[in-house]
Image (tube, rainbow over all chains, first blue to last red; front, side):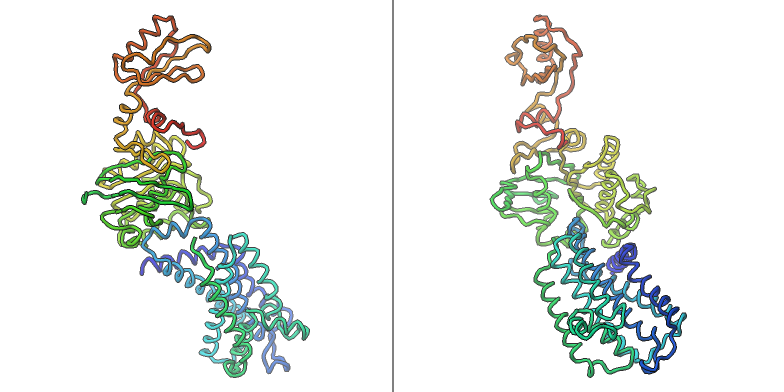
Length: 248
Length: 308
């Protein structure tokens, strides 16, 4: 138990020290809040049922934090561990591969939570963030979305043979989703045809569900198609990961 | 047989059509430093990895402390200290964090600060892995192999990347580990290292053990206990030395003549014959036979510079 806690903590520190991922997870979302907050403020908008620009943007940024950790940190660190014989070294300790893997996931989840807390704090202090939803519904949406994103990152780790390839693949899948899935930009501004394409990207239903939860919509009833896409991606990703992932 | 810390019996391991280890047997006793020497591809690492439980033998029996490492790897892990031939840690992991992490994975552990200062890494406590020199990395891996105070150590290519000074520091350390009652199995390219450290040495050649004994007995048996070297002018004619009683072998490399002799009497007759034939005794040197010479005689292949 002491070993697992130390493993989680060490992994967490290492993730924090990856400058690229740490920036996108911890610094970038609050910076976006400050940027758009300074331009538009967070006054109630009649077109958004009394919510402000920041209130609408924050669930998207939450999705961005999840996607960054799942798509960058997870595949790149797993690939480099495998490539450099770190997993082999761990194999001659009493730690089982499953425990190692769980510790890795917990450290990533911790990083996601840190990113969300920072983001919400900055939005709350800077622009009096409003949260009309209920906490259980938002937590459920967050956990569901987090699992979907981590499963996707895990599948990415399973199909990329090297750390370098993982890096390229991560960028290739991350940037389109950053702009099309409603993370950095609200999806409302996209043209209709692009919206249709965006709807099938793995991060899109995550953001949809998060935003619905934030705005106090009963997403489990009203976002059936998003939930279907989310479920398909999660199951598909886990199948690919289980089928292709190799420790060595 | 039951008292042996490590037992290997008729071990065989193939990769595809390549036979890596071809029927190897040996035992390592408690408190012993046992060396495996041989060139790349001789089967050293495969044998050690079977002992560590990282590979499953195709045939034969492998036991560490009476247990099967492939099936009981996790149960054996606290008793085994391992230094892999090729390994790495995350670039940004610091020395102190690495040792603390590995210490936490085991039921018991040594004082971490003290261990690091013994290994000359006290000042690198906060240095990230990527910033360490080759020798520092090697010493850190040794620290990770030692931190849980194991009973058996497997050190694969102990002094890779170390300069002569660092090598001697590590040798001292290995000796002091043994004096604390540990059993050590190490592999090395360096005959000098095997000679300096090992109680017994197994010479691996093409997946088999071609000789197994203490360094001094291997030298006496396969090289001759004494070694005579003389600088000679190129092209000078030499008397027949190989037929002298007690002379094991005569080698003529560049401008150096090397004769391996069994005893003092043989050395004397070599020197006398040279003098009688008017060969000037420039830089005449008589020294103890070296394990390297025995290795050469056994395998017929010198270790290339690169491998050393």
